[in-house]
Image (cartoon, rainbow, N blue to C red):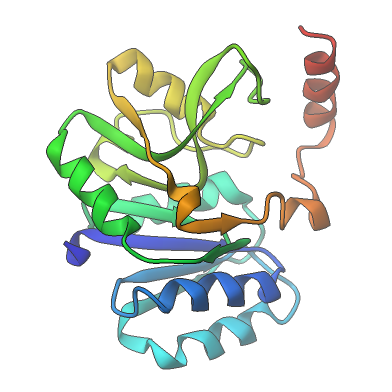
Amino acid sequence: MYNSILVTIINYQTPDLLKISFESFRNYYPNVQVLLIDNGSRDNSPEVINKLIEKFPSSTQTIFLEKNFYHGPAMHKAICITDKEYIFFLDSDTETKKGGFLEQMYEQMQNSKNTYAIGRQIIVNKRGFLSNKGTPILTPAYLMLRVNMYKLLPKFEHHGQPALKNFIAAHKKGYLLKSFPIEEFIEHNWRGTASRFGYGLGLKGKIDFVLNKLGI
C-alpha cells in the first residue's frame, strides 16, 4: 500500500510550521515516501528542511524551487513528477494527531475506481469562497487523489482554492470526490502561511473578494 502513495508537503517561508507538520506525520508514518517542496523561500527554510530529512533520508525527497510558484502550481509540479498511483497533500500548517488515515483513504480509493479524490468536503461558490450553496469540493490541506485522473483535468492553479476548476471539471466527468473525516486525525491551522504572506493574488484577488461580498 505505502509504495503506491507519495505524501507531499509544500513550504514557503514557514519552517517553524513545516517542522511540526513533518515531524508529527513521521511519528505515525516513518517509512512512507514524502516529498518536501520548498517554494523559493528566502529564509532559513532550506537549512531546516535538510535537517529534517537526516532521520529519514531513504524515504524523503526534496525539491528546492528557484522562486515562489505559489501553492497550486507547486502541487501540480509534484503530481507531474511522481510515478505513484496516489498522492496525498499535507499542508505545512498541519499537525498529525493520530495515524490510520492513509490506510483508510487508500482502501476507500481502491474500492471505488471512479473515486478521484478523498478528503474533507467543503461547499464553495463559483469564486471559491465558502458558501451554503454551491459546489462540493475537497480542501487541499489534506487530501488524497488519483494521479492518472488528475492528468485528464485542468491543472491546479494559483488561486485561493487552487483545485477549484479541477474539481468542477471532475464533477462534470462524473468522477467522485469522497468525503472523509481527515480532521479527526490531523489538526489544520487555517491560513498558516497565508496569514503571514497573503495569497499573492494581487488585483484579481481583491476584485474577487469585493464581488463575492456583493454576491456577484
